[in-house]
Amino acid sequence: MRKQGNRSKWAAERPRLCWVMSGVTLLALLAVWGVLLGTQLLPPLYLVVVLGIEALIVCAVFFLTRDGKRLGLTIAGSILMLLAVVGSAISGFFLWQTVSAVQEITGAKVEHSQVNFYVAKDSPAQSIYDLAGSAFGILKELDRSNTDAILEQMKTEYGLIPSTKEFDNLIQLADALQSGVMDVIVLNEAYLSLYEETPGYEDFPNEIKAVSTLQVEHVVESEKKQQETDPILNILISGSDTRDSTIDQRGRSDVNIIASVNTETKQILLISTPRDYYVPLDVGVPDAYDKLTHAGIYGMDVLTGTLENLYKIDIDYYFRINFTGFVDVVDALGGIDVYSAYDFTAENHHYVQGMNSLDGEEALNFARERYAFSEGDRQRGSNQMEVLKAVFRKAMSPSILTQYLSILKSVEGCVDTNIPYDVISALVRQQLETGDSWTFESFSVNGSDAYSTTYSMNQNSYVMIPDEETVSQAQDKLASIGNVIDQEDVPEAEAEAED
Image (cartoon, rainbow, N blue to C red; front, top):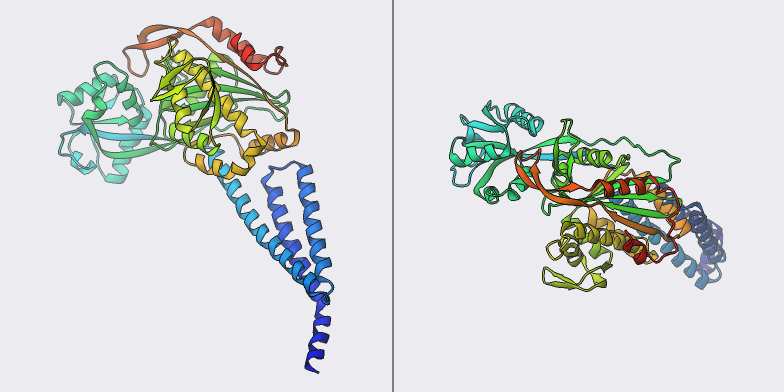
């Protein structure tokens, strides 16, 4: 009697169990679909396909579990439900990680300047309190806003009111500390790299020590210049020369490439500007001529404005990466295939003329080398654009979808950009929807070697005087990126050779 009663109870519970299991499956799958919709990464067709697959899974669970008499089918339906729920949880977690990783590097709003209190290396001073009563050497005009902000922090945070003595330039400031005229100087850490490239002062950074460090925060101009209907995106790709500093720390920009992207014609034009190009920096001071690489010390707004003035364009966004991040990105991509115009050796690795399969460190050395070429920094700029093209190709490959999360994780802390999330997601949707291949064109502006006074050091340094003809050519190319490239049917290597 008990067995028959249990069967009757099971028969009564069957409809309820069927609907509960189907409902749980439906809720789990719809939650994942909702997260997918929220990421804005998939085009509508993909979302419809995902929804269709989820509907089939829910129907399968329902029909497998509706007849309680067939225990095997019921078990199979239960297993399918569990797989759907567990799979939804895992998928939702990875989608959340993806969005978080992208948002981590996008929409950059602040930069930081690290200003230090430096004393001689053999000084007994160990903390900022040991500097009480000392006169502080400061720069009279250069980087004055940061200096004043730090001195104000000393008053509010440490209760110290220092006396100061002004110096006209970095050379005078270093001489004052080395000669003992000043016991301590206040200096933006980014300027130490300028001493390293100044004859007679190369060892100065090794002869001093920082006894205290304070940070100044700067808001990055984030106004979007690109119009919604404009298919052209001008993006500044800046390569910081730092390895250990955080990516939002101001410093020299050794790589300065403008990527002009036409999302309609699938063209990418890369314009490279040598690091030593002698141009007026956009610092609000007339005729502030300096090396382009020094513009990064004053922030991305100055670097962007300087290049906008040079090429007569608006730059919509920037993308900044340091050397550590570059290595990690290439390794996360599984390596890249890079074309080299020459046979050469750098950092104990030999690169052949033609295609080279490179890991992150090898690709970095390829992009940084200049002494192996008679054209020096000019050839380095060309090599950097070859590396960029290799990264673009690999990143656009469908096979990279299996590695996308590791790639995103690898760039956290090493890459930042002010490109909004919705712009990136729109580009991803478009690429997934069309699957089109892209056409690349690259061009480097040229110049002549010279020595001239720079804004940052106020003494003669090696610079590259711009060749106005190549600058004009670059301006024309940037202005015509909306047109179809005339040589689109010419093999890429041949088209680039003509440049």
